[in-house]
Image 1 (cartoon, one colour):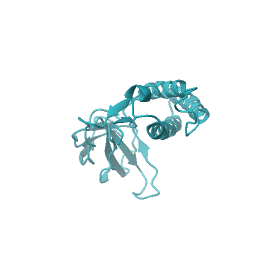
Image 2 (cartoon, rainbow, N blue to C red):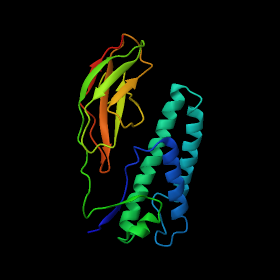
Image 3 (cartoon, rainbow, N blue to C red):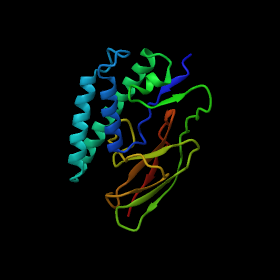
Length: 208
């Protein structure tokens, strides 16, 4: 049983930090004799990083569609990094320095491993000081590194189109740009070193 694993939770990183981590992984795996055939390929990683970098720059100019595009590209980069990290775990020797040489962070499974955080509960949603803004108060869960919220104006169900906010350290969220009088569904989840919890039970609220 391996005593070292690559860290696969990137949810707490800012866009800039995630982009930097992806570039480092690409650099450190390129020509690395211990990991000769990365899956996914480094070409695919580089392409997704380039697209993500463009999406970050575009989103800085505003616009909900540009922000949504940035989130989509971020999710694609995280997916590739997580699959590459699994490849490193399965291919490389159980040596911390070798795993660190791939650009990924590493943790020990021998002792002191933090458990996963559990699914949170939305405790309250109430109007903020401005029209179309609400505060969503979620429970603070033990072992959580970051908290995340999503919301939708669609009927709750598998076809709902969700807007996800970037992960943050606090469990209380300020949501802006809502349509007054419209019914919204909110859900939260936590991220820990062991991964991401399930989404909370949905909470309905109609902002003023």
